[in-house]
Length: 72
Image 1: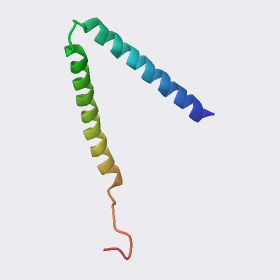
Image 2: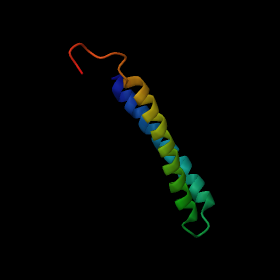
Image 3: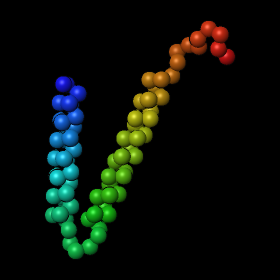
Image 4: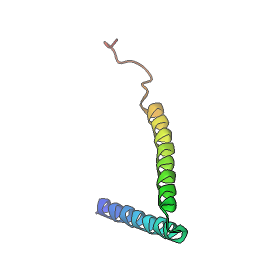
């Protein structure tokens, strides 16, 4: 039950976020592709920053503190 609720909340937040970003792009529309291209580039940049952050956190969490017996 809680998994379904969590999925619904994530879906709601994603939809609302997309609506807000869409409204911003719509308000910036000037007859060219520039607002859409700018939003795409910003989205890619933000995703890349989150990727770098997550990769750094993942490496810190999975580093073994000692080797198991019998391994080299």
